[in-house]
Length: 442
Image (cartoon, rainbow, N blue to C red; front, side):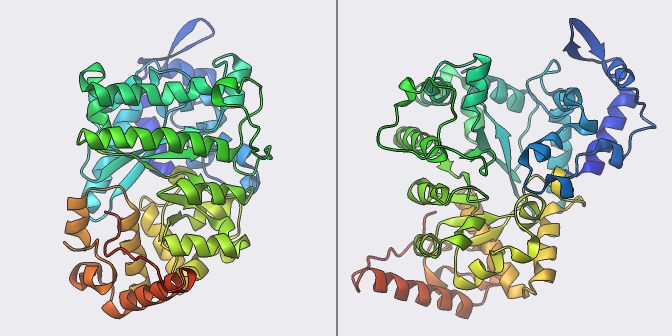
C-alpha cells in the first residue's frame, strides 16, 4: 500500500461514513466527521503532502522520527482509526484496506507477499483479538502469508505498569500458542489463523545503545528492572520457546513457525552473531559488511538475507553504499524485499520498484534478477507445493539438479558455479570432511 492508496481510502470513508462512531477520547465518543473537525480538516484539504507518511531526509539516522511517520497528518488518532486492528471499530477500516491490497496482489498474479502484523506481549488475549480480526474480516488470500512481529518494548510496558517482569511478555506471547497447539478447540480462530502464519520477527531500533549480555544476567522471571534486555536476550528466549513450540506442532502434524528477525540493520555486530546461531533467515543484515568473519559464516550456512536497500537509504545507509551487490556477487543467499512500503515507496508496485531501481543502479542483468527472485522463493514461508509450482518440482535438490530453467530462467551454469564454489569453501573449512546434504531445507 502506498500513501496515495491510503489517502483515497480515508477520503472515501469520510465521504461515505461521516457519522460512523470511530473513537473514544477524553470521555466522549466521536464520529469520523467530528474527528476531522477537531483537527480542522475536511476531505477537500487532504492531500499526499498533508498526510505526511513518507520518509524524508529528516528520518535518516532518526528512527524515532521515522516511527512518527506512521501517524497520518501527524495524528495518532488517525493511526488508531485507520491502521489499527484493536480499536473501537474492531479493525473494520484496516480490514477493508487490507482486502483492497489483497485484490491488487491477486490482479498482479505473479506477486506474493509476506505481511507483518504486531503482537506486543502486553496481554494473552492479543492473539485471540488478532485471530478474530483475521477470521471475521475474511482476510485470506492465496497470495499472502503472515509473519508476526514482536516489538522489543519491555522497558515501556514496565514503566507503564503493564508487566512486572520480562517473563510476563514471554508468557503472553507463547502460552496461547502452546494452548492452541495442545487443544485447537481452546482457541478455534487462532488455530485457523496459525495455518497462515509462517514466521516470528523481532523489530525495533537496533541503533539504541544497550547493555551487553553476560552469564550473570537474571532469568526472565527475575528481570524486573526498568531496562530493556539486550537484543541477544530477546533472540535467545524467543528462539528457545519457538523451538519447543515447533517440535510440539510437528508432532501433531501442524504447520511450524520460523524465526526470522530484523537483524544487522544498525547497532552492535553482536546482533548478527546471535541471529546466526538461531535464525532461519533475517531481514537486512547490512552490518555484515563490517564483519568479514560473520559474512563468511552467513555464506557457508546460506542463511537468507532479505535486504531492502530503499528502506536502508531512508534510515541508515545511503543507497550507493549498500552492500547488496557485493553480497550477491560473493554468493550469499540474498533477496530483495520491501520494508515499510507506505513510508518508503511511491508507486503501487513497491516490489517492482525495489527490483527496478536495484537493476538500474547496480546494472543487474536479467539472469541476476531471476536468481534473486529464485532466492526469495527459497527464503519465503510459502508451502512446499507452491514452491514446487513456482520454481520446479525438485527445487529442494542442491545444484543444477534442483534448477528447472523453464521456471526459474536461471541458467544451469550459474547454479553450478555457485554450488561448486560453496562446496570448495565447505571442504576447506572442514578439512575435506564436510558432510554436505543433498537437499536444501524445504
